Length: 354
Ligand SMILES: NC(=O)c1ccc[n+]([C@@H]2O[C@H](COP(=O)([O-])OP(=O)(O)OC[C@H]3O[C@@H](n4cnc5c(N)ncnc54)[C@H](O)[C@@H]3O)[C@@H](O)[C@H]2O)c1
Image (cartoon, rainbow, N blue to C red; front, side, top):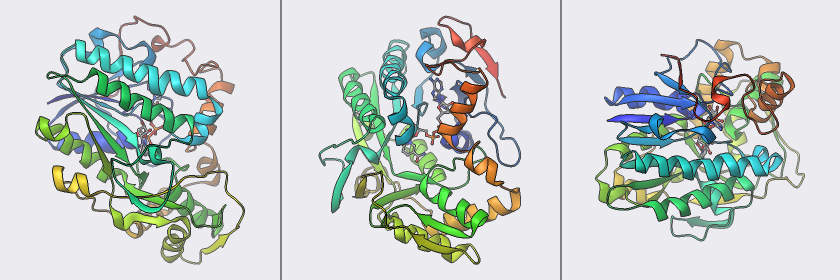
């Protein structure tokens, strides 16, 4: 299939592109490149790409693709809370516009990166895809709105599918340090302390970036009936852990690291345990990576690639990186590129990577 991957220069996209290519797909990327040079270790092999702001995508840029995998977003709750209007513009409005243009251009399959954060605070029971959605942040709200609007666009020639991913973990050359396991392993390696800024009781479902990539590959190839307008939780029940359990898994892997539970009431009210049976049953998808194996992988990569405290606190933290781009004058207050071909609508695509 000819597949357009938006957000291909992000944390998940950088892991996903090689997985799709290995399955025989012809991949093109589309990204504004906020984190393109935030790399730990050797530079990834990017596919041919379009350097563009999602908000300015044109119909011509979408012609000729069989499927779109839509990852590009301001991706995380604190970031979304800081700039709620821009989060809605990029994550919601631009996503729906992208889908509409893709449908008009003859794209038949639209795979959307949603999140288990849509369940909000769901208590101790397992939530499946039919559970009420209680998004607690602008980020999670934007995901729910896109799902709703994509259902309205669906018809016999256009099939959206929503992959509600658990929180990702694992090594990607375009690392993120602001997601829970990656963050705790980093602190363990750099400070010797696995610091939990809460009482450790909230539930978090976790999934490895590579398993997410495989789930998207499965959805590209699944029969239309199995994916048309369907939501699938992506992860595995064995990786539904409390934050304290995640911290213990890290301490077991990083020599000398000690767990510190601060007990303060955390700013993040999310807590949910997720049922992943539907993807297993209907797509045959099984996540392979355990949290322990992921912690081991991260520990080895951080150590061998020489992760520094500064990079861990700044370059690999999405919010800090966007602030830096703003201070350098690379992006404006709406996070648009300044003095860049991608900054205005109708520009011809700038090819990057390759
Ligand atoms: N990482 C997770 O734990 C997780 C969990 C569930 C869902 N998701 C979803 O998966 C997707 C990818 O997440 P990620 O962790 O790779 O995030 P990321 O921040 O690493 O990557 C997002 C990419 O989108 C690009 N982007 C952002 N705004 C853009 C714009 N206006 N125009 C063009 N490109 C733009 C960025 O440059 C970046 O390369 C997101 O939609 C996210 O919400 C992620």
